[in-house]
Image (cartoon, rainbow, N blue to C red):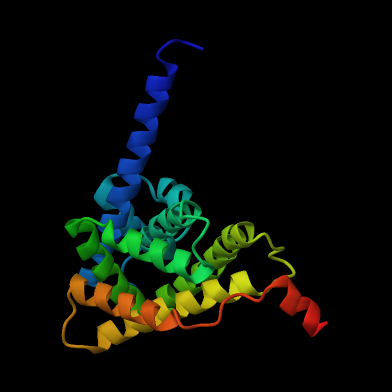
Length: 215
């Protein structure tokens, strides 16, 4: 392998990331301007000057382009959760990781996130696919929680239940935000924080002794 191979690979990966980001931004703009149903894969690809086939290699579908933002947030959430202190309870760790991702967004990212959420909530095909991805991602989060708790994710329901209720809290906050008069990023963050705080009185995970007693 040549000495400049790592540098070439790094440049190629950066170019892919820039193209991916450009496609996501183009899709957001077009969906807002023309509407989700009236926008085609060809329309999105034309903005970035690539072929529709190349676009499908990046995202697979029209829905996948706009949901790339959620994929990025989900990946960041997994990293944050894995890095939380072991002493935190599952709910504390999930709450802290979720807020860390939200608080770590730049102003531009926050504005784009709000626009994407409005599009998702207003278009049933996008909402349906978003909920599917939330379910898929939830299994991965539950796996991380199971490792923290030292339990089998296939046998113990608590990790999946914890992820589910946190996800429901975030979704409820989004719906509340869209129904309100204040559609700022700060308001959405406040509502998510409030919803997560309401969960902190939820019961702690059962101990092994509790499980044995139930048997």
